[in-house]
Image (tube, rainbow, N blue to C red; front, top):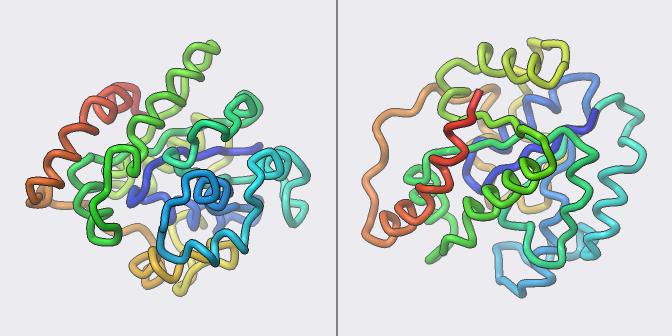
Length: 237
């Protein structure tokens, strides 16, 4: 099984990669299209040069790796993908060959968290539009994609991960609830900038409280993303 998990940034995506990476039957890969995305956009993301040096910039090579031999001869392959990376020129036709799951988070939380790490983000930077496009692509192909909300996972990680495993016909493994402190060997090179909190963790953080207070710019970003979030939320597990 190849599980492609699609989310925007600051969306519990790294913790989910750690959860699947804690299973003995899964290999994992961290944002494999990141370098290809940076090479095409020219964006000056933190650690840009290191990312370009660490990954293939040819998206067709990335696809070949995703569909080729699973690393470490594991039976299953978890692929952590950022939807904002799926710009023009990045192939999407291979999605039909993997099990796709969409991981969503309330836009207010994404806007507040991402803005703390990245200056003046726009809607195209946080992946909500692209996530909805990918969802529509699969729906048009006759597939009903799975959707899981990060808030539901944090509220009850065991119950929601059990439901996810059942939905993709995967045996439950309680190892998914815990991982070693300090990160995963397959973290992307950008982990030093983005993964501080999850590196200090050994499991999922508790349920979140009230929505954060936003600046005017953050509120505008959250409002723009809200229709795309609500569209997918209607389909969540």
